[in-house]
Amino acid sequence: MNQRLICEQVVDRLTDLDEGALSMSETLRMRMHLLYCLDCRELRDELRQMPELIQQISEAQEQALLPLAQSALKTALARAAEFRPIRRPVESPIPNDLQQLLKSGADLTLRLMESVHQTFVEGAQALQAPFLPAAVLAQLPPQESWNWKSKGNARIATLMDSGNGGPRLSLLVAPRGFQTPKHTHFGSEQMLVLDGLLEDGQSAYATGRWVNFGQGTTHAPLVINDECWCLIREEGTVRYTGPLGWLRNLLAA
Image (cartoon, rainbow, N blue to C red; front, side):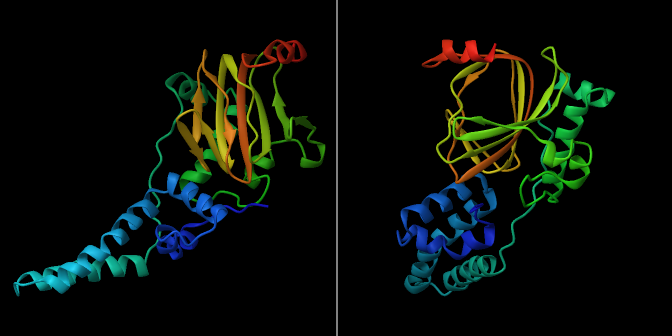
């Protein structure tokens, strides 16, 4: 079940979070949202300033200071009451070489991925599994024919595969705690988080984030929300480098 919080739910409980009144699970979900939502973080900072503003009002000695403090408090309270997340423009994360490929229209997997990403930019993304817009689903094989394979306690379906190391488009569904075995790319990977939150080293990738991993990249992404859906486009091969890497490489050959 998708338990990702929306901005309105987070705003209602910001005070509870700062006062330590939430359960461990609720606190984690709140912090995950704040990790990638700039608007909620900014509002939280403003709310944290309210006690100081109130104190300024109560301690104001000069008549000129009192209206200024009252005005600042009124502005902060109004923002909290009427808060609506601002949709911020998202620049295309596609590297220059892939942008040229996209313009040529030759690679359907890349075109589909860009189309899905655009729905996030426009705020029109699908909100239910498999989190792909109807226009993209219409260009893929029927969902009932998707061949899901187990990948540990996750599952993955190959939606398109040109073969011979060429572009392939896959859909990965993974539960909390799933971590892709550490591997190195001998090719490239583009990953679009359709729903969920991934941790990869010092980075965190939330819903709507498109990340490019170039040749030579070594990583092991970890799912830190309840369930994560990712659209993945790969070219070339990967080589596992962690424990039992030799076995995984043998099985993948």
